[in-house]
Amino acid sequence: MDSMNDLLMNTEGDLAFQEEVVPTSTEELQSLLQTMTQRQKPVSQEEMMRAATMLKEIVSSSSPAVEVSKHLDEIDNLMPAIIDLNIQQARKDGRPDLVSGLGELKKNISLQKSIQKDAYQNGTNRTNNSFEIFTGKVAVFEPSSSEVKNSERIKLIKEGLYSSGSLMTEKEILKERPGLAIFSNAFLDPQLMDMMAKFSIAKVPIILDIDESFETQFLSRVNKVDSNLQLFDRKLTASLFLANLITTASESFANSLKASNYPAMVIPNCWSIANPYWTEKKENIGPTIQLGWFGTPENLDDLAAIRRPLVRILREFDDKVRLVIVGNQNAYRMFDLIPDSLKTYIPYIAQEEIPYILNQMDILLMPLWKANISNMNSDDLFMYAGIKKIPWVASPSSVSTKWTKGGILCSTLDEWHTNLRYLILDKELRFALGSDGFNKAATREIRTSIGSWNQAFNFVASFQHSGKKIN
Image (cartoon, rainbow, N blue to C red; front, side, top):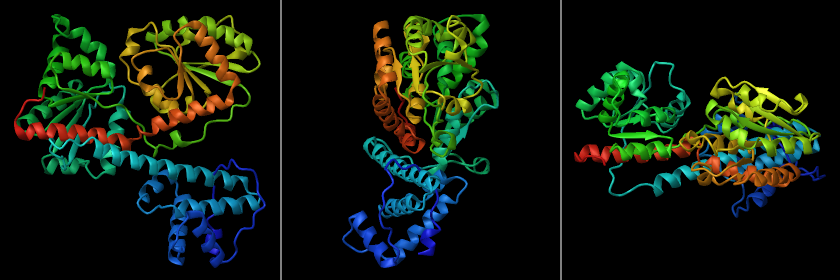
């Protein structure tokens, strides 16, 4: 039992302290585990020690989430039961810090097992028997230019491919031909364009992944003749021509590409549970409810459209509500008549800061009425809110009406005021919506999302080998 006592580490418990007797002998522990796991066969000493060793490795690791992912195949219903026993012992010992840490570990294990299940289902459900199953190695290339906004997308693609053993290393790329190549925004880098051409001649299937931020540039150039744009057009057109398939996170962008007779597929952006900043606990900001808004120059008019109900809410709940404006000082100035005690401005610098910023929000505001560009963007903000279990309030758009989970849609200013009041006053509603959003966002974790990429690989490889043109 000394080895079991060594396992007491960290997690959050929601149950009140209960004076229960913790088993002190191996036989009693095995009997209790058998009852907790509802197993007919008694828990063996070997199973206990294996689970105990595994738990100790996880909680002592500098990156517990990564360690959990390594052991998913070995974790069964015995592990949560042992964690429960340790939580019980920690409660009895008056160690709330250990109770908190162990609870979070249990949630992490549950989430990753759910993600693994979704990934398996997505991979099997999406397999079309008419497609050849791609089993080769994938080479991924991105521009050396700093112009690319969303390098996180390629980073996560690499992570997903690496976890499945499909990613080619730089040394492997120099020695052997890839089974398939992904190029990110290749038109930004002449070297990538040259490599695309060589791979095309060598009959290597090519996927061109384009950041949705280039959507407006693409639309402004389609079927237009402008001598000042010819150089960009040649690079863009050449990369589109060389690609067997074009992927993007924006559905409207994909539709625009298809309308111009380019083969395109939507693969949404994702996130990774291995990133500790996504899984860290949201900050406790006290009794104040923080209403958060992420700003860009394009969506300032959207915020202006709901300014009146927001001001009304801030004055109505001046002792309970605070407005958080991110990334747009002009938006902050829009509320000059509101006391500084009721508003905060946070400069938005890099994507890596998004988890920290979201930790300071309780409700995310996403008015998307006026700026047409809002209908072209991906659903990243909805996903980010879901990861952090933050309910959102949004106006209807092509993005919000498809996400559906985790928030409330408002079509009128009266609905904005009424629904914000409900959320501010009803903590249980905020919790329920946040949980729904989290369940939706969990399906976009990279180990699940890699199934979408596998579908694209199968699709491209089948047409490449058949010699048919992808329509």
